[in-house]
Image 1 (cartoon, rainbow, N blue to C red):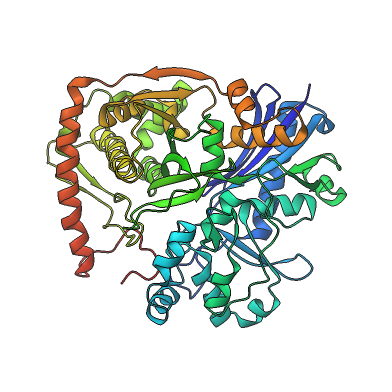
Image 2: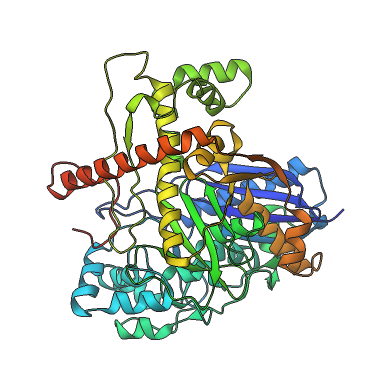
Length: 521
């Protein structure tokens, strides 16, 4: 039997997942991790590459041990990761500095770019589909200004998935789907746009070779094999960004197909031709897909999964204890209770992530509004359901914006990630969007998408269309409850009006934003 491995470096955790050649998940090794602020640097989120490599190696060894296989049976390994996070290296390939995806330290640099180069963000957005909010240009300018010695030593830049592959193979390279999120990239050419760096006074020779996902970049070294338990000589295959690989794992590999990946963040994605120019209003993000010739229009709902984790850990000790007694997941207990709560969650309004506004990206202060003093209606079950409803509502708003731009409005929506594992959330999503929701057998679509690329690189599969038809299977289909669609449309309209007022409280300095993109005052 032949096996494939994906190492998925997410925002909240790292996992190594082994699949067989039929796309069946065999085992997983997983650890939660944290990305901590740097002392004295507001809004920073460092990526601890030393500690995190130790954690990554643990996950790989655990996955191999759980699978009970000879590591030599793993034909290829690849990686995916949170996007936007970058790693800087010296001329010897040693890591110098790294940040995770929502590091927001470069606010001053974003404002300076806009002030010193009027219209440049709009110009670069038309080429790359990215704004400066989480892009690499302002972060590199921050390093140049505040860590000049590191900047001078910097010889190469990569994404975090590329870093994983570099640790395994010794080869620093990148792919379009993840490198595209730096903003220093051409959607059409699927290659770096180095002129963007030089125009703002940055080095233009630090960008590594670009490989398409599924291309072999090297082999597992003896050193990496000793550390991870992988067999030296195992093919190392280019992977990509977590959302785009997740799309592949859902079979969303053709223009016009759409999906929602419900993880730490929620991404609403619609596949479009790579020649399509990003929208003038800069409300949406456009990224290179892992499939050559395609891009993806994307909306993002911030922290949906992380908000659920916070709610569980802050308020749900009783549900945790019940779950432990019953041998089930805490979220399953919470969904059981929430399923008894009526549509609208007794009027509770959660204020967390806003709908996508990529050109001016920030959020209101986290809160629950419209609570009452009646414990029968304002309780954990109702609040939990309101969070599920809210994530679906924001997703529907983002999908509507994508449809207005792209002209694509399919009747079917593929739903994957941790949020799709239950029964209530998929039904709510179907009811809110009015679409048929398909749930795949493999919920960890990003890891499966990586395995698909690894399999192409290993010669098991011929191309992405063939492997998508071969390995993507559906567990169930959820039909919308037509009685609930109009109710949720009214709730969504109410939520948007209330959220706008909550944003004004942040603008007035009375409350603190959940998150602001760098450069937003």
